[in-house]
Image: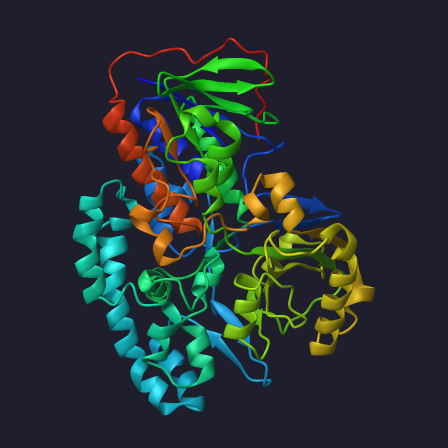
Length: 510
């Protein structure tokens, strides 16, 4: 049995904490913020409840397996509600489609604009099933890609499946209409990827959604955070909040603990669920980093960021589905401006999360809780968000009112803004990224920072910055990959060891 510290309490850290504690190790989570959750934080104000980050569940089987590892039933802790449609997508020409998991309904909608695309829907899904089977059914997403041999064995199969082809190119090879092209290529944006260069490993997400559905946790996604935290504590794990780790201590090439406010706390192993670039740059002294030097870290490509508005309105907007996308006319050009040119566009494509469409209890009676998410460049762009954020928010509100959300400004009772600068300051996200490392081919599988540190013993990474990547399913699968590394290095033995207690940091419960 090992004493293990986990830095950060996002979905990846919590999932790993539950699995490790259930396996017999003694685990303690250290969280910088006042509550657990990481990017899956919660905001409450004037009766309105907002999930601040992840907003949907696409693989309930993965969540169920975490509870199963602790000999619990997910249904005893979380109430998942199926969504239909999965997304309502409004296009620039005034048309819209309700994207869902019913093949007949999907083909009927596609046929309105392109009979050819309706005919190709089944072919696309069947081919994406091959990628889904490799990543999910056969478990490549939860296996560490920590050797070149594993990567070499994967590449020929990936080539046969066209899984290394860009997602947008894959969609284009099946569909002609611009609506279809978008619907079957936009998913990488949900994990910080550029659809025109992210590999088609991520094109299997539409199949995953059709296979398992799209769900929402009643009470908000934070209900899943609370449930995982509860199970972890029931198993004997400990959570320390308002405790930012200053350093990971390394002795003779091995992680030996953490430091908080100058106090050293010894551990047998350390896991970071924090931003992976910040983990190596800020928490580990340079003399211990031969691979992940500052120069190497500077070469990593961070994802774009997001501008978020958490809005509570005293009126309802029934035209909005639980997940609503409102798109500009530009697609590739807009994304290029954000990713490649690091320029803040003048036009908007946006995602609205409206949980009160499913769970009215997340706002006062008759009111709406929503967040508006707009992809924007990360802090590599020349934008002073402190100076421009209110003007930018006003432009978004003007746009939404002109689009059809009447009296939005006058009906708002709550409005909070979250910019790339907050991603950097609140979440220690390098360059204010919203999703950690960009999922491009050269940062996929073996090319990502490994789940087991390549150079420091007993140091591990979990979450969006390691294999397989961002998104709720991705970070939960990363927990399984990291778990297998830890159990190889620290097999569970009989007997119990006490957790480190040579610190005065107060243990708080989320």
